[in-house]
Image (cartoon, rainbow, N blue to C red; front, side):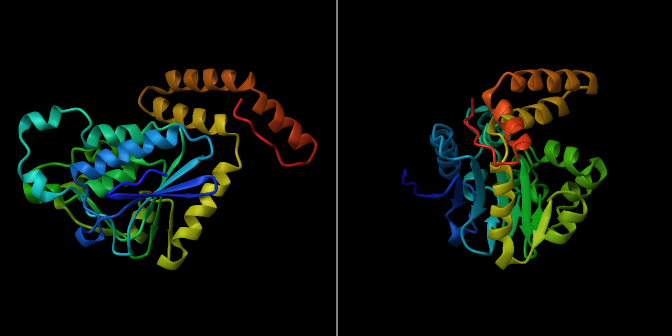
Length: 260
């Protein structure tokens, strides 16, 4: 597997961990780290043995504590519009064809919180802390924070978090719907792998088109979303995996999907 400076890629069966490896800086996300994440995703996209990606941070103290403030201080207006910035990479994660899980182990602040928001599923340990403190620097969350958070937890709750910059616990994140599970730190990896295993047991083409239907449908009206859903189902009805899935159910055996 390709070696990177700021992240680790760790395959585990059909899973692959992408671990932000800058613990001495609370796994802060500098430009180089973001580019490595983009490169890793491109590599893993072509690897048919990998069916699910789990993002996490090195150590137990931090998932990712936001952008590198030293680099942020030097940003100019034009930098916002340069290609392959944080917002574009998180967009890539959101529409990635393979399912993604954010395994949040500690601080997920600013760009770290936004990274978690771009994943399909978020789980947290009880020592997790989520927050969007950008307004303290007289900037805003601009890697999807003002948009994804509001869509996920509601406009009022999102505004409260963004305008006050408060940090919330893993338990509070679960209560408001920001994460789907919260467990003690020692159980976090097992929970992430349990969720991944459930996804990996499903038809991979169905997983891909379910993601597409939810994400595309959420950005439009319900009638258009239902058309997207119907077209996705029509595609799946033509696949060998659909025949295998239905046959296996009727024959009371485990299906063997081939992504065809």
